[in-house]
Length: 328
Image (cartoon, rainbow, N blue to C red; front, side, top):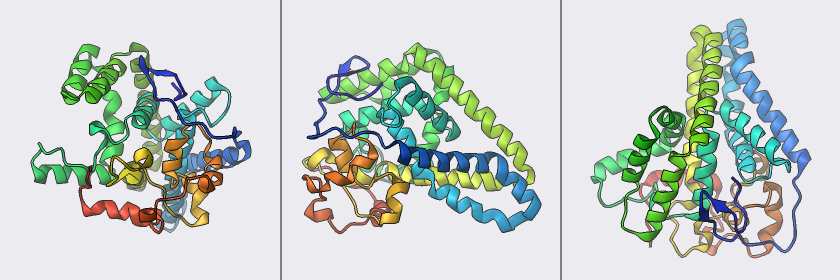
C-alpha cells in the first residue's frame, strides 16, 4: 500500500505528506539502467558465478565485490517500488518490486509495511535500534545492537515469514506482547502491527514469496557445489551492508531535527549506486518523489544542517559502531 496524502495504512490515517512546488516524473531510463545492472548481478550470483568458479577457481572470487557493491541499488529499486515510483502502473510496479525482493530473500509485504510505518513513526520508541530502552541489561543491549548492525536486521527479515506458518492468533499475541506500551503513539503502532500480522491475504503472499526465495537459493547452492561458501559469504556481506544502512540516516538524531533524519555528502560516482539515499532527510520530507528528483531540491531548504554539512555517508556509517545514540 502506497504512502499518499490522506491514504490509510491498514486503517490508520497516514500523516499528510509535504508537497513539492512541482511534479517530478519517474526517470524511466535511469530506472531501466539500474534494473538491468541488478538483474545481471542476480543472474551472475545465482547462475553464472558457480560455473565460472568451477572453470577458473579462486581467480574469479573478485566477482563478489560488484555483487556486494550493488546491494544498495537492489534495495533502492525495491524501495522505489514501495513508494510507487519504480513504474507508474501500480500492479506492474508492485510485482517488479516483489520479484526483486524474492531475489534478495526479503518479504516484500512486511518490508513495505514496515517502511511506510517508519515514515509515519520515525524515531518513535519502536523505531530506535540505536537507543538503549533502559530496561534490557546494558551488556545484552550492546550485544543486540551490534548484532543488528552486523547483519542481524537482514537475518530478522529473512526469517520473519516463518511466523506466517504459525496460527494467526499466536502471531498476533506475540506482536502485541512485543510492542506493549502505555504510550498512546506506541499503542497505535501496536494496533497497526497486530492488524498486519493477522491479515490473511498478506500471510499467504509472504509464505508464497518466502518459499519461492528458498527454492531459488536452494537451487543456487546446489549449482555452487563445493564452492557454496562463496555464495553464503556474499549473501552475508550484502546483509551486513543492508543492516548498517538501515538506521544510518537516523543514528543519534534528536527528536527536534527536521524529519528526524539527516542528509550526507557522498562522491558523485556513488549517487546512482545509493540511489540518492544519502539525501534521506529530503526523502522523508517528500516521500513520493522519485529518487532522481531529490538532488534538485538541495537548493530549496534541503541542504544538510550545519552540524552535518561535512559528514560523509560512509564516515557516518562507521560512526554507528561507537555505540548507542541518544534521544533528546
